[in-house]
Length: 277
Ligand code: FES
Image 1 (tube, rainbow, N blue to C red):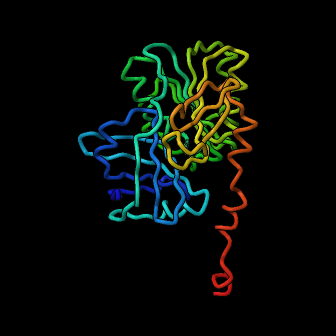
Image 2: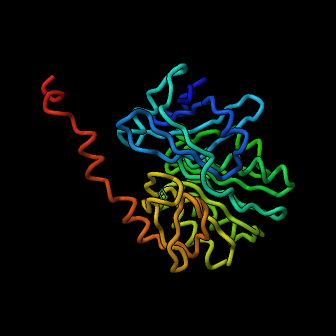
Image 3: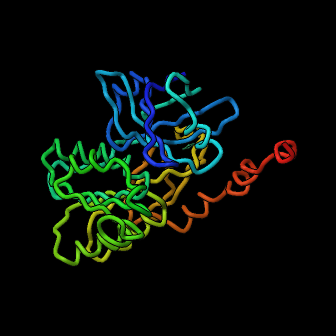
């Protein structure tokens, strides 16, 4: 059991939770994640760590409501408990000790970008953060992320704040304009990470994406999170979540990420009794 200590509504569908988890906080590093279960019948959901505080014994999670289980998670209030919170899982992000790094966060992916920006700044690395959402209201953690970035570049699909367009398009502009980035880390929806990979490939910019496929055990035993990278089979839970973006088989990753779409849709449909109520 892990108790929710605080809850913030970042957007109508995105919530931030501070959770009592001292052992996880003590061992966590940027780029790692946890797997949570909301109840006995709930699926296991991998969630990137947005923050961890050793002194307070807490971890911070940003959760977006995209399905039945994430909806149950987002409805939790302070004082309520998660059935399980297991972690930290996965490898820390392969962060450089020096250089000029561009971070790209799409939607709630900005939550996973924040601890990476903070750690890079601690190392003295120059950080540019390019974050995107559909509208200005949906951009999350702006102040936190801007505070840990040498340059902060918001992007919105509707042009309501910052660059008018997708993050990959802004990244392309920066690269075409001569930005001398040494590394790129991207976290967000699969199409965004794929677009970032396509943008940086011609520039030969070392690029890493964080993959969060369907996961069950989180220990490399069940095979649920299998992906292909450079022609080799990898397991995102133990070999990732960050992988070389230019070697990821995105076609396969997209197909596998949609394996349970029908089940999820059925889970969200009202029961006959519920429909009649
Ligand atoms: Fe089971 Fe990764 S979640 S092998």
